[in-house]
Length: 67
Image (cartoon, rainbow, N blue to C red):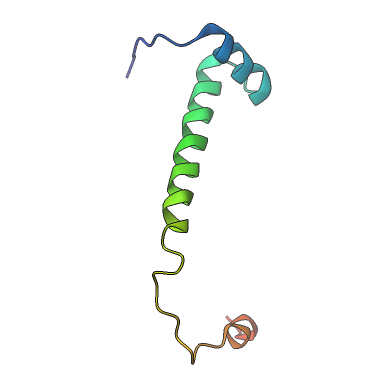
């Protein structure tokens, strides 16, 4: 989907240089992916303290369980 956007040229140039991507389009796509990932991670942290802990759950036993 082609889209025309008014992007600050200085921001685009900085993102392009920092990303190491081969094209400005690739740099913008990477920036969007990272933005989305960061926002999704922030939503997970909102759950801390809201979920009930199972006192019988043994995380060490789960680690040593053979697959």
